[in-house]
Image (cartoon, rainbow, N blue to C red; front, top):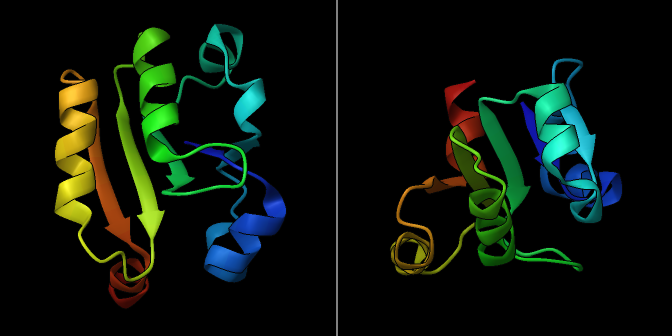
Length: 109
């Protein structure tokens, strides 16, 4: 698994619960084919919105790099996640994309 974003934002989004040893962290600008080949993630995580990118930017980049795993964008109380998911499906029809609400994730742990 690889999480794209900055550590400060990850801590703000999920506290220490999301910072795990089995998760590789990288900045958006670091994501390239070499990193994907090295980590070989089945899942990519990111915030829906970040200071340097949003989930549409990352979806396009993952598609361009030929990523075949799942991409989950994390949010808290996003008003209309289905609308964003539809937009990403139009932009990147082969990408397995969904928005995961952090509140739901915490309830399942």
